[in-house]
Amino acid sequence: MTSTKTDEAKKLPHLLIIDDEREVGEFAGIVAQSLGFEYTSTTNAGDFLKALDDDVTLIMMDLMMPDMDGIELLRLLGQQKCKTTLILMSGYDKRVLETAEELAQTLGLSVAGHLQKPFRLPELQKLLKGYALLNILTPEPKQISKAVTKDELLRAMVREELVLHYQPQLNIATGEVVGVEALVRWQHPERGLIFPDDFIPQAEVLGVIDELGWYVARLGLSEIRQFVNREGLQLKLSLNVSPQSLHDLQLPDIFVGLARQYGVAPENIVLEITESGLIQELASALDILTRLRMKRVHLSIDDFGTGYAMMQQLRRVPATELKIDRSFVHDMHQLNSARVVVRKTIEIGHELGMKIVAEGVETKEQLEFLRINGCDIAQGYYFSRPVPAIVLLDWMKNYAPLHF
Image (cartoon, rainbow, N blue to C red; front, side, top):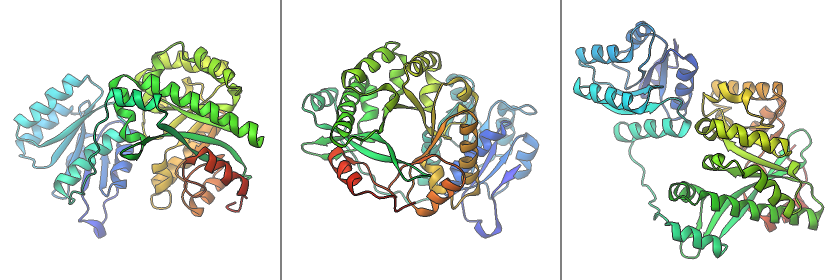
C-alpha cells in the first residue's frame, strides 16, 4: 500500500485507489497529486477497507480484482451507506462499465464517472478536475471559444491562414540547436491567433484532419528547406501526426515522396506520434511506422509517460526517440515520483537505443537535472517559445549556448 497522506495536510482532498495492477495505481496517484490531492494506493480489498475512513473524499476502483471483485465491493459499500464519490475503471467493454455505474447509483452510491483501460492522462485529469471543481475548489471562469466548422477549416487552408511556429530543440551536452518542432497556429482574421487545442480536435471530429496534416507537412518541409538554403543549417524537423492518420497504409510512400519533392532528406524528419495513437490503431500503426523507418524517417513517441499501457508496446514500435511529457519535467523539483519517472524513461530509452527529448524545460534547475541524468535533447521556454520561422532564424543568428 502506498500513501502520501500526512498530518500536516489533512485538509487536502484524499483519493483512495484500489487496483491490483500496482503501476496503474501509482500512475493515477501521481496525476492526482499534481492536481492537489493526497492519495493512497492499494492492491487488494483488505488494504482498501482498512484505508477507507472519513478523510477519503474520492475512490478510484478497478472492477476486476483477485480477492473481491468490484461488483462485490460496490455491494459492500452500498450496505455500509458509503458517501464517498467513486470513479470506476476496467478493461472490460464500455457497456460493463456503464452497467456497473448504474448499479452503484442504484445502491445509493455517488459516481463521478468511469475510465476504460487503458486510459490516458487527459481522461483521468478531466475526471479529477471535474470532481475538484464541483466539490472542493471554486470554479475558475472559462474562456468559451466558438466552435469552428468544416468549411471554415478548409477555407483557412486555402487562404493560408494556418501558420507554423517553431520551437528549437537543443543538444543538452553541447548547446547546439539540432532540430525544431513545428506547431500549427491559426491566424484567424477576426479572432486573432488560435492555438491547436481549439481546432485540432474539431478537425478530427469533422473528418478533415488528414487534409490539415498534409497542409502542415507541406508547409513545414517548405520552410525547413529555407533554413537549409538560406543559412546552411542542418536541422531535424519534427511534425506531429494525428492518431487518425495511422490507418492510411499509403502514408509512408506519400510522405517520403513529398519530402523528396521539397528536397528534404527523410533522415532529417521526425514524426511524433502520441501513445494513444499507438494504442488505438496498433495493427496499422506498426505497419506504417515500420515502413517509415525503412525509409529512414525518424519516429518519436510523444508525451511518453502519460499512458501506462505504452510500456507493454514500447518494444514493438521502431521509434528512435522518446519525448518526456512536460508534466513530469514541470514536477521534477517538487515530486520525487516525477524525478523517478524521468530517470527511468531516460534509462529505458537509452537501453532501447533511442534519443530522449524533454519538453517543457523552463528553468536552469530542470536543465541541470536532465543533463546529470543523461537526457539528450531539451526544448522549452527556457530557450525559446514557439515562434514564426523568420523570428527563429533571427534568434539562431544571435544564439550562443550561454544557458549551458
